[in-house]
Image 1 (tube, helix red, strand yellow):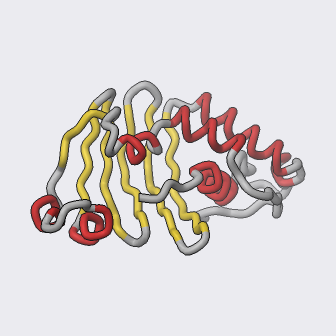
Image 2 (cartoon, rainbow, N blue to C red):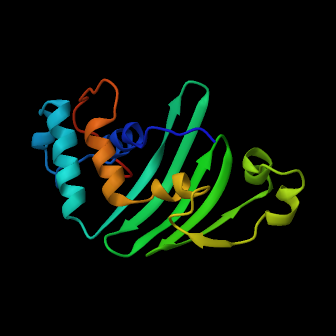
Length: 167
């Protein structure tokens, strides 16, 4: 399985979400005129202070696509899904325990042994979130590591001003 830059994903997600967007007035938020690096720094600071963060979006790197729809709760865990190359996997992480459920497409794409897809498809698997084989998947749902990556692991940034997201 290829690893993706979650920082790139989070930059896209937080910009799309309007990072500190205004309260519906006619004046743009201060983030609309800040340097893009400052917007990222402010978004990371706000997310670190939050008790929960919802991250939703997609990133394309080369011919690979990663989709994320996760809710992270500080000190508790995470729940949601990731789509890797069009194959969706549901994730739940509570403390040191993780659960995942991949469909047939997921296991066909990422299963290492013949026949594993039919056996594991649509079944919840329980494992340690530190599992060596699956740790790269669950490591991506850790708020601290996601936010750290956001502030340092991204491409060229641009601020296109204030946008309304979902009304």
